[in-house]
Amino acid sequence: MEINSYAKINLILKIYPKNKQEIKHKIKSLFILDKSLFDLISIKSSKKDIVIYKNKNKTFVLNDCLIIKSLKYLKNEFNIAKHYSIKVEKNINIMSGLGGGSSNAATVIKYVMKDNKISLAKLNLKDIALKLGSDIPFFLSSYNSAIVSDYGNKVEKFNLSKKISYKIHTNNIKVSTKEVFKQLEKTRPYKSQVNFSKCLDSLLNKTFNNHYVYNDLHPYILKVSDKKLLENINKISSKNKIICGSGGTILTIHE
Image (cartoon, rainbow, N blue to C red; front, side, top):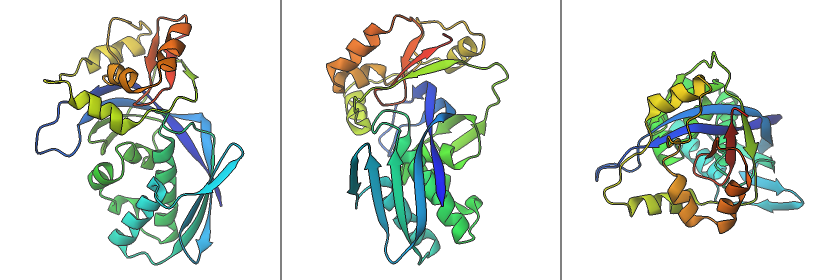
């Protein structure tokens, strides 16, 4: 079976300060599923679990990736004995902030749950967000747009009555989410700069305000990324631009 594994964008990303008892930072974000960009996943039964990636002209097997971790998680939680051969044809740039890895994992999770006749409702989304990835619960939902909060486990459908137009500016710059958050942790005390309600109003009313902060991770992404990212941002003439998620993809809004 071949399945499309779609990208996502974050039009707003608020990161809350983390206390000592928390494993991850809580977030609040506006997610949109972008069906114009997707990886293609092929899944079939196998004698052992194997994940093969095809990225441009390169094909390679990964023994330690989010799909493998997700399979191990499901087998442990639901005593699944089946094995799967999974091929991923990558079109979504790796470490780009477009959620490709999380989308791939969620696509496989949904397939395996259905194949083993287990309801998705039995998944512990908070556990998945904390152990596997905060973007995965959104991809497990059927929503085209949603407000995602807590650790990523709270996904509330958000109907965009007023269409938000945007353009994705992709590049080959890879940004490590782990390194971005390491930089954020060095900011003491850290305080979110995103006013979520004001940002949301500005997007819905098509009055993008470039004095607002739409992504709390912006300065930390620039600290850990190739200097070419800043060069790429400056090359875009629009004032209505933000960095997407924790990666190097640039979005222009209401062009």
